[in-house]
Length: 203
Image (tube, rainbow, N blue to C red):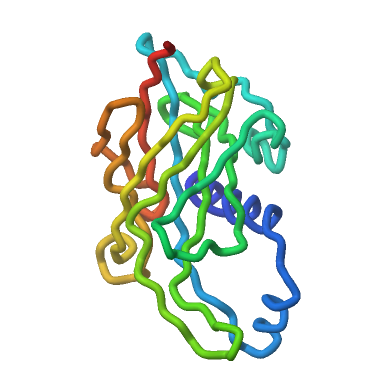
């Protein structure tokens, strides 16, 4: 049930941060709505001593213990491979209190979409390859203790939900951060949320 609530929260944050254009509204009216893959990533940031670096970050309450991180406390830009269009769902970072997790550590949530199919200006359906690489360029003094932009490089695989042929979903399989490679990824809520702990050694 906790994981279901996390999915609902991610979806709510995504909708609240999306600017729907007139063209997109017309597509919906015409029954030509674009389709997407969703990339859901939960990150716990800890220092070398196991301290929770996310706990206490300022956020806007959407439900008990969770909500979008206050915008003026960070900047985030998710970079797709060259030539890949970016959907209107903006770069989003949310906060999830440690009370929601068994280990008690808070998480930052990153929610991005990538196009699966899109209707062009002429109404033709265009299919795009699955986005396998997303680089999150994050500036967050609360987490890192500086004003620098930090790269979180992620690789993704397209798999059936639960690996039983239910629904396709994007799963993170590798992360590079601060000179380290992380491949021990946990999967939550029927495996469509990828979760990992990153260690930050302040410079």
